[in-house]
Image (cartoon, rainbow, N blue to C red; front, side):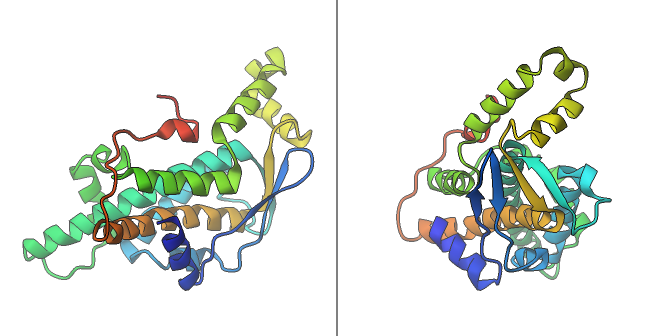
Length: 241
């Protein structure tokens, strides 16, 4: 399923970016061949509206930043955001598939949905029904493989980040944001320097991977028996149980 989704993104003109380890805890994300619009092309207009809101919520401090500016982000934070956005994209595609099916069955008209209509639907059906976990273990493992390929072991990165802040003692307790900035400037924690526009593109790539994973999962279920997921496995993304 991983390879199927990667191929779909390539066909859409939005091949996945690569992350290359550098020196002193820095990672370089290879500049993507296509921009955010290409990464969003696999979504309906309704879903694009929701994902644009998701980008703004994910990185609120960057919304007024010049898209060409290079920003430095903890690799753990970037990786966890990517992982959770992939889950969000998966949840949105599942919800939209059901939404369109219900509109068809009830004779509600055309299949196209407005952003507000889909958002209201998500609220009505209780988001946890969609967002708690992926349906199959295979989909979960495909997402975990992608996140590790981009960012490495998120739990290891989380532990290293926590240790770096602990080493800064009382100062980190008084002003954690300032001390984190110092730690990043000194390369005390793994980080990535990335153009702001490319970070936005990375977020949309994650959502597109999750959405296309739903389609790959549906196709795979017609060919073989997949393993039903029993929990969200979110601990692999540094999320506490």
